[in-house]
Image (cartoon, rainbow, N blue to C red; front, side):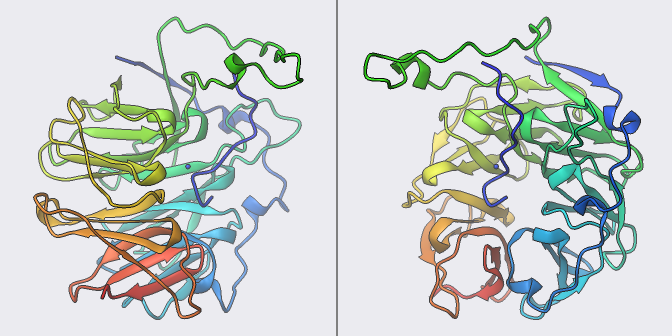
Length: 365
């Protein structure tokens, strides 16, 4: 049953035939100059303590992004500097390649830095506008992946997938759908029982025709994988030219995916669920995470090691692929255990964490 186009964001903002279509937004009316997606981010003294949704490590330091178009940089994960960006839309994801950076998020915004994060330029903005008929308008981007400084992918809600081959100067809509799929139809009116409640059949969750795509990663073999809403799992072995939909053992949403050498991957998400595969998702094994809290972010470490973070301050770490996860709970200076959305492990054993209360450096006890 088709859904209404009221988008939902990634938590804290959460064989197929691939057809390449022109990006409709290129011919759509320009957003109003006073739209938040078009306005410069305001400088805020406490930006490092505001909602942050993704983080990346580069040779120039760490970069974190979040609400109100915030982009922050740090060399140590303790002191942060807010950088100037020309959007106030919430940024949900940040990626780097060959010294360049890209960030993206709500209103279909993508911003780019060609100088290691010092200056940023808006490449794309597609906020919802009442007089336009572009279905991609207002759809948030939830993750970015660049395989090099020229070639990248942006994925998001309602199966949004954009590709670029020129460092983001132009973005092309890549529609992922089954051949011969029927045109969307008007949803049937819901039916109710004699008590006035929805019938059981109305409450069943069927497979979505356009599931949200939450995260994308590239393995050491060069393969690409995507995880998303309601057990969505896609993989590509031809650099994203075509995608195959494969079965996944859990029908809940996966919010992230990590990748290592070969075809080793780990997907994590709702209610502490995490699954690992050594053959690009042909077979899976369920991991004992010891938690029921949803897992929102993570980082792949050498030799199959990993750190995963999520709701209620949960932090899971393992030193290598053969070791179990060890759980701990992050508590900030105010005694809170906030929802965490990203992590970067440091050489001294500490971890830089980001989430709903900003950024902090954490040393598990």
